[in-house]
Length: 210
Image (cartoon, rainbow, N blue to C red; front, side, top):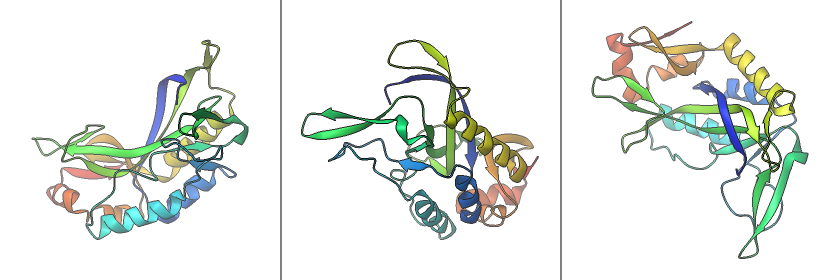
C-alpha cells in the first residue's frame, strides 16, 4: 500500500471461530481482499477469511503445521469505492487504496530465552498466535498532505471492533503482566492446550484476565 501511514492502533485476537465470525460481521457489509499479489484483471481478490481462520484453529488444536502466509495477510474494506487498480507490466494489475483500509496480519511471537513470550518478533522459531487487525490515525495520500483518519468509514468500523474486543475478551498475561494478545472465555479452553503454551500455563507463568 503506497499510502504513508502512522500512529497505529491494533487488536490481537486468539478467539474461537464462532466469535471471529461475530467480530467480522460487525463490519458488514465489507470486503476482505488480498492486496499482496498481482491480478489478472482489475477486480479485487476476495478472501474467505472466516473459513481460513476456522481451519487455522483446527490446526492449532491438532498441533499441525500452520502456513504463515495467505488469508491472514489481507485488507478489510468497508467502502468499496476506495479500491483502485493500477496496471503493471505483464498485463497485470495491483490493488491500491484511496485511503487506508483496515489491515490484517498474523500475530507473531517467539519464546524468549527466559521462557517468556515476545510479540512482533520474527525468527525461525516464531509462533503464530491468532490475528492482528490495525488501523492508522494519520495518513498521507496522493496529494502528500497529512490527514487524520477520523471520520472515515474504516475508522468508525475499527472503533466498533475495539469496543467488541474490550467487552468480550481478556489479555493473556505473562508473569501477571498483560501481553497484547486477547483471548475469550470460549477460546481459553483450547488455547491452554496449545503445545508451545501448555507448559507456561501449567507453571502459572502464563494466565489470562482483565
